[in-house]
Picture 1 (cartoon, rainbow, N blue to C red):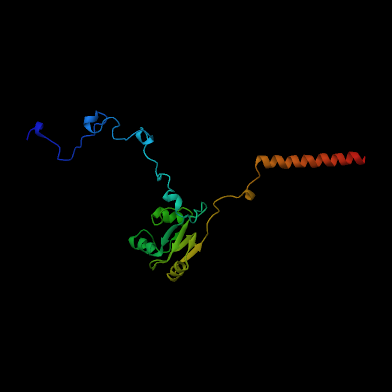
Picture 2 (picture 1 turned 45 degrees about the horizontal axis):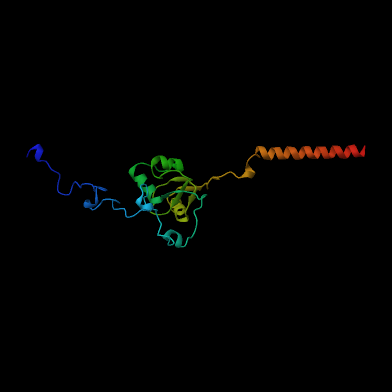
Length: 193
């Protein structure tokens, strides 16, 4: 074999279509794009979901439900996972664990809004857990093993207007109302005198 004899495998290289090179080529004049219209122009890449004026599929199927933007995202941890961690030497018996500790050990994926403890598997080791939520079966299993579960709940995600100090506009309104009251009372006193 010589350098000048090296060739691609059959079908590995496909020559591009030479468009607009005369009617004899079979792809001359309109270059296979038909006649005029938006589809014949450059830059047109089709309209995703458009079905030629027919009601598109994504619009004609019924819609149900909604996505709650305030929904909590819990990292779920099963008691069986905790037992595996103890057996592998990641955890020691009698240790107090919270969401951050579980995330640091790689048992919970990440803390998110807290950890939800679930009862899948079997726990034989005493552990003290502080979690945002725990199922009844999980609490029972931990207590049976001699441990404790403290359900701390979740922190408020958003502060409501009532909990915050009033904004500048609200403060201006309050001061203006006070001034109006003072002027009105001064006017009344002036009339009486």
